[in-house]
Amino acid sequence: MDDIIRTYHPITLDEMSGIKLMNRTDTKFVTTVSRLKLLLALAYDDYRAQDIDGMRIASYYTAYFDTPDNNMYIVHQNGHAGRQKLRIRSYMDTGLNFLEVKTKNNHGRTKKKRVDMVGFDPSNPDHGICFQRQDSQFVAYDQFLRKHLRYDPTILTEHLENNFNRITLVNKAKTERLTIDTNLRFHNLMTDRRADLTGLAIIELKRDGLQPSPILGMLRELRIKPCGFSKYCMGSALTNPSLKRNNFKERLRLIDRLLSSERAV
Image 1 (cartoon, rainbow, N blue to C red):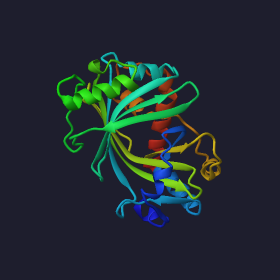
Image 2: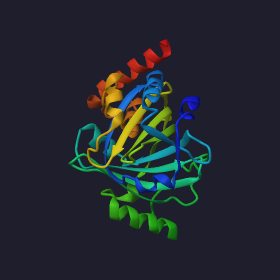
Image 3: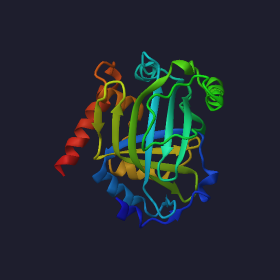
Image 4: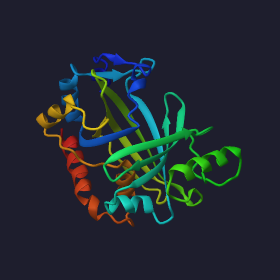
């Protein structure tokens, strides 16, 4: 993958500063790494690749929180709008760590609020984080969560962690970002079960409103269709057999089919 993405013209973080898209619409697609390589060949003339100190593929770590009864998962599984997720997102190559609240409203728009997660080490993560008023830093987290999160932060614990690699593309008009996640691996902290989705690629088109996008025609050409994919929900469904998953069964079957086809290549 790295040899393909290195042929792209680069875009720096400074150049990307005007396209954060913190209030955006997201469209996700799921495909195989083999088909992703075809897509990257088609997209070369229309996109630039994010480059951070010569690196085009970034490493990410995420820890997701939930209530004791998995309410954040259940609300999503039941198809309710206005749902929220709470996570720690770590950019492992740059050492940046954020506590993030993601809210998807009734109109399909995603809003993200975040604050620095001081002292967090994704290479040796603390799985016992609790948002109690135990010191001045956690008072700040408590205030942040009570402002942006509809859940009582004191009952939340870490349920799932994942690692993956990300390529970020920006169209030359700078109206959208395209993130491409591969090597996705999950570890459920409740059940100690793991799931490895290496061989899949999760593509997410992020844009303000419904701006024209050059990638959509290429995706149609390759018959890569839109497909909702929440990393937290899919990872939880794959690693916790006690969870309800009726509304995720079709996506779980798609994952199985794509992984089987990729292994056969």
